[in-house]
Image (cartoon, rainbow, N blue to C red):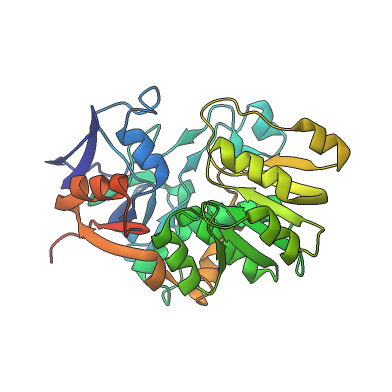
Length: 341
Protein backbone atom coordinates (compact mmCIF):
# COMPACT_ATOMS: atom_id res chain seq x y z
CA UNK A 1 0.00 0.00 0.00
CA UNK A 2 1.37 3.42 -1.03
CA UNK A 3 1.22 6.33 1.40
CA UNK A 4 2.36 9.97 1.40
CA UNK A 5 4.17 10.71 4.66
CA UNK A 6 5.17 13.99 6.23
CA UNK A 7 8.59 13.28 7.71
CA UNK A 8 9.45 16.72 9.07
CA UNK A 9 11.78 19.36 7.63
CA UNK A 10 9.25 20.35 4.93
CA UNK A 11 9.49 16.89 3.36
CA UNK A 12 6.88 14.56 1.87
CA UNK A 13 7.96 11.03 0.93
CA UNK A 14 6.08 8.14 -0.68
CA UNK A 15 6.47 4.77 1.01
CA UNK A 16 5.01 1.29 0.86
CA UNK A 17 3.36 0.45 4.15
CA UNK A 18 1.22 -2.50 5.23
CA UNK A 19 -2.49 -1.65 5.34
CA UNK A 20 -4.23 -1.59 8.71
CA UNK A 21 -7.05 -4.15 8.85
CA UNK A 22 -10.27 -2.77 10.35
CA UNK A 23 -10.86 -3.80 13.93
CA UNK A 24 -14.15 -3.69 15.85
CA UNK A 25 -16.09 -0.55 15.00
CA UNK A 26 -13.69 0.41 12.19
CA UNK A 27 -13.93 0.74 8.41
CA UNK A 28 -11.19 0.42 5.81
CA UNK A 29 -11.61 2.80 2.86
CA UNK A 30 -10.02 2.48 -0.56
CA UNK A 31 -9.20 6.16 -1.02
CA UNK A 32 -9.96 7.68 -4.42
CA UNK A 33 -8.91 11.33 -4.06
CA UNK A 34 -7.40 13.43 -1.28
CA UNK A 35 -7.32 17.23 -1.46
CA UNK A 36 -4.42 19.36 -0.28
CA UNK A 37 -5.57 22.26 1.90
CA UNK A 38 -3.97 25.20 3.69
CA UNK A 39 -3.69 23.19 6.90
CA UNK A 40 -1.65 20.56 5.06
CA UNK A 41 0.71 23.30 3.88
CA UNK A 42 1.02 24.51 7.48
CA UNK A 43 1.94 20.94 8.45
CA UNK A 44 4.54 20.74 5.69
CA UNK A 45 6.27 23.86 6.96
CA UNK A 46 6.45 22.67 10.55
CA UNK A 47 3.75 24.91 12.04
CA UNK A 48 1.91 21.89 13.49
CA UNK A 49 4.81 19.71 14.59
CA UNK A 50 3.43 19.83 18.13
CA UNK A 51 0.43 17.81 16.88
CA UNK A 52 1.69 15.74 13.94
CA UNK A 53 3.78 12.74 14.94
CA UNK A 54 6.18 12.51 12.00
CA UNK A 55 6.58 10.35 10.01
CA UNK A 56 2.82 10.45 9.51
CA UNK A 57 0.35 10.22 6.65
CA UNK A 58 -1.59 13.48 6.40
CA UNK A 59 -4.67 14.69 4.51
CA UNK A 60 -8.33 14.90 5.51
CA UNK A 61 -10.28 16.11 2.43
CA UNK A 62 -11.16 12.85 0.69
CA UNK A 63 -13.49 10.49 -1.12
CA UNK A 64 -13.42 6.76 -1.68
CA UNK A 65 -15.23 3.45 -1.39
CA UNK A 66 -15.43 1.04 1.53
CA UNK A 67 -12.95 -1.81 1.13
CA UNK A 68 -13.73 -3.71 4.35
CA UNK A 69 -15.73 -3.34 7.57
CA UNK A 70 -14.74 -4.52 11.02
CA UNK A 71 -16.86 -6.46 13.51
CA UNK A 72 -19.89 -4.63 14.88
CA UNK A 73 -20.17 -2.10 12.04
CA UNK A 74 -23.73 -1.65 10.81
CA UNK A 75 -25.23 0.44 8.00
CA UNK A 76 -22.04 0.51 5.94
CA UNK A 77 -21.09 -1.99 3.24
CA UNK A 78 -18.19 -2.88 0.97
CA UNK A 79 -18.19 -0.85 -2.25
CA UNK A 80 -20.25 2.00 -0.82
CA UNK A 81 -19.02 5.52 -1.78
CA UNK A 82 -18.06 7.52 1.31
CA UNK A 83 -16.24 10.49 2.69
CA UNK A 84 -15.02 11.17 6.22
CA UNK A 85 -15.84 13.91 8.71
CA UNK A 86 -12.42 13.73 10.38
CA UNK A 87 -13.42 14.68 13.92
CA UNK A 88 -13.23 12.25 16.83
CA UNK A 89 -14.37 13.76 20.12
CA UNK A 90 -14.18 12.51 23.70
CA UNK A 91 -17.86 12.92 24.60
CA UNK A 92 -17.15 13.91 28.21
CA UNK A 93 -15.44 17.34 28.24
CA UNK A 94 -17.42 20.55 28.91
CA UNK A 95 -17.70 21.33 25.18
CA UNK A 96 -19.07 17.87 24.41
CA UNK A 97 -21.45 18.03 27.37
CA UNK A 98 -22.78 21.34 26.03
CA UNK A 99 -23.46 19.77 22.63
CA UNK A 100 -20.44 21.27 20.86
CA UNK A 101 -18.59 18.03 20.13
CA UNK A 102 -16.99 19.43 16.98
CA UNK A 103 -14.83 21.71 19.16
CA UNK A 104 -14.16 19.13 21.85
CA UNK A 105 -11.43 20.08 24.34
CA UNK A 106 -9.61 16.85 23.42
CA UNK A 107 -10.53 16.70 19.76
CA UNK A 108 -8.66 14.23 17.55
CA UNK A 109 -8.61 15.88 14.13
CA UNK A 110 -7.88 12.87 11.95
CA UNK A 111 -5.20 13.68 9.40
CA UNK A 112 -3.47 16.03 11.84
CA UNK A 113 -3.54 14.45 15.28
CA UNK A 114 -3.64 10.93 13.82
CA UNK A 115 -2.90 9.37 10.39
CA UNK A 116 -4.75 10.84 7.42
CA UNK A 117 -6.15 10.03 4.00
CA UNK A 118 -3.24 10.46 1.59
CA UNK A 119 -2.83 6.70 1.22
CA UNK A 120 -4.44 3.94 -0.78
CA UNK A 121 -6.14 2.14 2.12
CA UNK A 122 -7.21 4.12 5.19
CA UNK A 123 -8.72 2.60 8.32
CA UNK A 124 -10.88 4.91 10.46
CA UNK A 125 -13.62 4.68 13.10
CA UNK A 126 -16.99 3.88 11.52
CA UNK A 127 -18.46 6.85 13.40
CA UNK A 128 -16.65 9.34 11.15
CA UNK A 129 -17.64 7.70 7.85
CA UNK A 130 -20.38 9.46 5.84
CA UNK A 131 -22.13 7.72 2.93
CA UNK A 132 -22.30 9.57 -0.38
CA UNK A 133 -25.00 9.50 -3.06
CA UNK A 134 -24.11 7.33 -6.06
CA UNK A 135 -24.75 10.25 -8.44
CA UNK A 136 -21.99 12.36 -6.87
CA UNK A 137 -18.64 11.65 -8.54
CA UNK A 138 -15.73 10.76 -6.28
CA UNK A 139 -13.79 13.66 -7.80
CA UNK A 140 -16.47 16.13 -6.73
CA UNK A 141 -16.89 14.39 -3.38
CA UNK A 142 -13.27 15.15 -2.48
CA UNK A 143 -14.49 18.74 -1.93
CA UNK A 144 -17.18 17.82 0.61
CA UNK A 145 -14.96 18.60 3.61
CA UNK A 146 -13.88 22.12 2.53
CA UNK A 147 -17.42 22.82 1.33
CA UNK A 148 -18.69 21.82 4.79
CA UNK A 149 -16.25 24.35 6.29
CA UNK A 150 -17.87 27.04 4.12
CA UNK A 151 -21.37 25.91 5.02
CA UNK A 152 -20.52 26.10 8.72
CA UNK A 153 -19.03 29.58 8.29
CA UNK A 154 -22.15 30.86 6.54
CA UNK A 155 -24.38 29.24 9.16
CA UNK A 156 -22.38 30.84 11.98
CA UNK A 157 -22.93 34.19 10.28
CA UNK A 158 -26.72 33.66 10.29
CA UNK A 159 -26.60 35.03 6.74
CA UNK A 160 -30.02 35.68 5.21
CA UNK A 161 -31.27 36.03 1.65
CA UNK A 162 -30.96 39.61 0.42
CA UNK A 163 -28.12 40.54 2.79
CA UNK A 164 -24.82 41.82 1.45
CA UNK A 165 -21.71 39.86 2.37
CA UNK A 166 -18.00 40.43 1.78
CA UNK A 167 -15.38 37.69 1.72
CA UNK A 168 -11.84 38.87 2.45
CA UNK A 169 -9.49 36.33 0.88
CA UNK A 170 -10.18 34.37 -2.30
CA UNK A 171 -8.40 31.06 -1.76
CA UNK A 172 -10.36 27.79 -1.99
CA UNK A 173 -12.24 28.30 1.31
CA UNK A 174 -12.97 31.96 0.53
CA UNK A 175 -14.40 31.09 -2.87
CA UNK A 176 -16.44 28.25 -1.35
CA UNK A 177 -17.84 30.64 1.28
CA UNK A 178 -18.83 33.06 -1.49
CA UNK A 179 -20.58 30.26 -3.39
CA UNK A 180 -22.43 29.03 -0.30
CA UNK A 181 -23.41 32.60 0.60
CA UNK A 182 -24.78 33.04 -2.91
CA UNK A 183 -26.71 29.78 -2.60
CA UNK A 184 -28.67 31.18 0.37
CA UNK A 185 -29.59 34.29 -1.63
CA UNK A 186 -27.02 36.79 -0.38
CA UNK A 187 -25.24 39.35 -2.55
CA UNK A 188 -21.49 38.71 -2.41
CA UNK A 189 -18.27 40.58 -3.14
CA UNK A 190 -14.89 38.85 -2.82
CA UNK A 191 -11.65 40.73 -2.05
CA UNK A 192 -8.47 39.07 -3.32
CA UNK A 193 -4.98 40.26 -4.31
CA UNK A 194 -4.04 37.31 -6.53
CA UNK A 195 -5.07 37.71 -10.18
CA UNK A 196 -5.55 33.98 -10.83
CA UNK A 197 -7.80 33.53 -7.81
CA UNK A 198 -9.88 36.53 -8.88
CA UNK A 199 -10.14 35.07 -12.38
CA UNK A 200 -11.42 31.75 -10.99
CA UNK A 201 -13.98 33.56 -8.82
CA UNK A 202 -15.13 35.66 -11.77
CA UNK A 203 -15.46 32.52 -13.89
CA UNK A 204 -17.87 31.32 -11.21
CA UNK A 205 -19.90 34.51 -11.60
CA UNK A 206 -18.66 36.20 -8.44
CA UNK A 207 -17.90 39.90 -8.20
CA UNK A 208 -14.31 40.57 -7.12
CA UNK A 209 -12.23 43.54 -6.01
CA UNK A 210 -8.43 43.94 -6.04
CA UNK A 211 -7.44 45.80 -2.84
CA UNK A 212 -4.07 46.69 -4.36
CA UNK A 213 -5.60 48.58 -7.29
CA UNK A 214 -9.08 49.64 -6.23
CA UNK A 215 -10.30 51.86 -3.42
CA UNK A 216 -12.15 49.13 -1.56
CA UNK A 217 -13.79 51.55 0.88
CA UNK A 218 -15.30 53.57 -1.98
CA UNK A 219 -16.40 50.47 -3.89
CA UNK A 220 -18.10 48.99 -0.83
CA UNK A 221 -19.72 52.31 0.06
CA UNK A 222 -21.20 52.57 -3.43
CA UNK A 223 -22.29 48.91 -3.49
CA UNK A 224 -24.02 49.11 -0.09
CA UNK A 225 -25.35 52.66 -0.64
CA UNK A 226 -23.28 53.85 2.29
CA UNK A 227 -24.59 51.28 4.79
CA UNK A 228 -21.75 48.75 4.81
CA UNK A 229 -22.07 44.96 4.57
CA UNK A 230 -24.25 42.91 6.89
CA UNK A 231 -21.57 40.21 7.13
CA UNK A 232 -17.84 40.07 6.44
CA UNK A 233 -15.93 36.78 6.40
CA UNK A 234 -12.23 37.28 7.21
CA UNK A 235 -10.51 34.38 5.46
CA UNK A 236 -7.10 35.85 4.64
CA UNK A 237 -5.60 35.38 8.10
CA UNK A 238 -3.82 38.72 7.73
CA UNK A 239 -3.69 41.86 9.85
CA UNK A 240 -4.72 43.95 6.84
CA UNK A 241 -7.68 41.64 6.27
CA UNK A 242 -8.96 42.24 9.81
CA UNK A 243 -8.74 46.02 9.38
CA UNK A 244 -10.56 45.91 6.04
CA UNK A 245 -13.24 43.60 7.41
CA UNK A 246 -14.09 45.79 10.41
CA UNK A 247 -14.29 48.97 8.33
CA UNK A 248 -16.57 47.31 5.76
CA UNK A 249 -19.29 46.33 8.24
CA UNK A 250 -22.68 47.96 8.59
CA UNK A 251 -24.20 48.99 11.90
CA UNK A 252 -24.81 45.74 13.83
CA UNK A 253 -22.81 43.88 11.20
CA UNK A 254 -21.30 40.46 11.89
CA UNK A 255 -17.61 39.69 11.48
CA UNK A 256 -16.86 35.98 11.02
CA UNK A 257 -13.28 34.91 11.73
CA UNK A 258 -12.43 32.03 9.40
CA UNK A 259 -8.71 32.54 8.66
CA UNK A 260 -6.19 31.18 11.14
CA UNK A 261 -4.39 34.06 12.86
CA UNK A 262 -1.30 32.56 14.46
CA UNK A 263 -0.45 35.75 16.33
CA UNK A 264 -2.49 38.42 18.13
CA UNK A 265 -4.02 41.09 15.89
CA UNK A 266 -4.79 44.73 16.50
CA UNK A 267 -8.56 45.23 16.31
CA UNK A 268 -10.39 48.57 16.49
CA UNK A 269 -12.73 47.70 19.36
CA UNK A 270 -14.12 51.23 19.36
CA UNK A 271 -15.90 50.34 16.13
CA UNK A 272 -17.50 47.32 17.83
CA UNK A 273 -18.81 49.61 20.57
CA UNK A 274 -19.84 52.47 18.30
CA UNK A 275 -21.64 50.40 15.68
CA UNK A 276 -22.69 47.48 17.92
CA UNK A 277 -20.78 45.00 15.82
CA UNK A 278 -20.56 41.27 16.53
CA UNK A 279 -17.52 39.01 16.05
CA UNK A 280 -17.85 35.22 15.93
CA UNK A 281 -15.38 32.44 15.37
CA UNK A 282 -16.04 29.61 12.93
CA UNK A 283 -14.03 26.40 13.25
CA UNK A 284 -14.50 23.14 11.33
CA UNK A 285 -18.10 21.85 10.99
CA UNK A 286 -20.96 19.75 12.33
CA UNK A 287 -22.77 16.84 10.70
CA UNK A 288 -25.61 18.98 9.22
CA UNK A 289 -22.93 21.06 7.46
CA UNK A 290 -21.72 17.89 5.72
CA UNK A 291 -25.24 17.01 4.60
CA UNK A 292 -25.71 20.49 3.13
CA UNK A 293 -22.29 20.42 1.45
CA UNK A 294 -23.04 17.07 -0.19
CA UNK A 295 -26.33 18.42 -1.56
CA UNK A 296 -24.73 21.65 -2.87
CA UNK A 297 -22.12 19.60 -4.71
CA UNK A 298 -24.66 17.08 -5.99
CA UNK A 299 -26.86 19.74 -7.56
CA UNK A 300 -23.95 21.73 -9.02
CA UNK A 301 -24.10 24.87 -6.85
CA UNK A 302 -20.36 24.36 -6.32
CA UNK A 303 -18.80 23.94 -9.81
CA UNK A 304 -15.85 21.67 -9.08
CA UNK A 305 -14.59 21.70 -12.67
CA UNK A 306 -13.59 25.34 -12.17
CA UNK A 307 -12.23 24.94 -8.64
CA UNK A 308 -10.07 21.85 -9.20
CA UNK A 309 -6.90 23.05 -10.91
CA UNK A 310 -5.27 19.66 -11.35
CA UNK A 311 -5.23 16.05 -10.20
CA UNK A 312 -1.82 14.51 -9.51
CA UNK A 313 -0.91 10.86 -8.89
CA UNK A 314 0.09 9.86 -5.37
CA UNK A 315 3.71 9.45 -6.48
CA UNK A 316 3.77 13.19 -7.32
CA UNK A 317 2.42 14.36 -3.95
CA UNK A 318 5.65 16.14 -2.95
CA UNK A 319 5.69 18.09 -6.22
CA UNK A 320 2.00 18.96 -5.79
CA UNK A 321 2.70 20.40 -2.33
CA UNK A 322 5.58 22.43 -3.76
CA UNK A 323 3.40 23.80 -6.57
CA UNK A 324 0.75 24.93 -4.10
CA UNK A 325 3.36 26.56 -1.91
CA UNK A 326 4.71 28.53 -4.88
CA UNK A 327 1.23 29.77 -5.77
CA UNK A 328 0.59 30.88 -9.32
CA UNK A 329 -2.20 29.44 -11.44
CA UNK A 330 -3.42 26.93 -8.87
CA UNK A 331 -6.61 26.81 -6.83
CA UNK A 332 -7.38 23.25 -5.68
CA UNK A 333 -5.15 20.22 -6.18
CA UNK A 334 -6.31 16.65 -5.63
CA UNK A 335 -4.06 13.62 -5.13
CA UNK A 336 -5.22 10.49 -6.97
CA UNK A 337 -4.78 7.68 -4.46
CA UNK A 338 -6.61 4.97 -6.40
CA UNK A 339 -5.06 1.53 -6.53
CA UNK A 340 -4.13 0.14 -9.93
CA UNK A 341 -6.72 -2.23 -11.36
